[in-house]
Length: 323
Image (tube, rainbow, N blue to C red; front, side, top):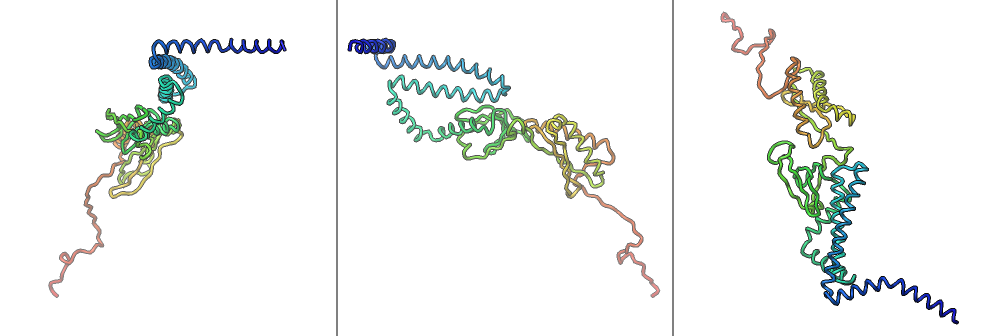
């Protein structure tokens, strides 16, 4: 019996020893609450938590950048992931602050439910925008640097935030597809309602098919014209041809004044206008050097042919006056 009591006493002492640190922390909290008040203590806890999270975010950010650079990720991919990481830390910080200020998980649950109800009633579009932002972060239909068309607006993606997408406008003030240096802010909520066209879905498919139409006259040497056009495109897009293995090609059709020859080639989306201009310059120079090539253009021409067997109008026929 004495041995049993001794064992029980030793067990209680061990439990008491293990709980002393927790009692010490609890005593400090109680003394602070009695001295400063419960609300002040909650605020202090919130400030401490925010400072800890800030240091954790800074350290994790450096580690993420180093890890992604080792895996040869692009700057756009790193920036996109860090944006998502930053907002995740902000969400965690908000939750911890609510817990610190409320003092219990039950109060936090009621607070979150109330805030969610308010958001559902009055902030429908912004909440939809945040959901669309999460969809973009997860599915990645486009990324920073891609050229897209959304709501009929063409532009390069400069920034993706939880509420808006910032596009660098392409065209707009000018014809063609060059940057106008104007920014367009598009709310994320429209991503669920509008089609989005991405010029380059991935790094492997960053090239698009483009064409330069050339009107060639009927009296031109068709075979020479085809070879000349392909050579002119090859001179400009040689690097792209080596990377993709796709040679320029010609598609032809008739039109009123000659033959429409469509010179098609692989092009870089963001340099489409520059590449097509260089090809046009090569074509003009090549056609000017050859007498067997000519451009077709709308014009009128009158041709006279002398044929002996042709019948003359009645007024020019010979009439025998003796009859």
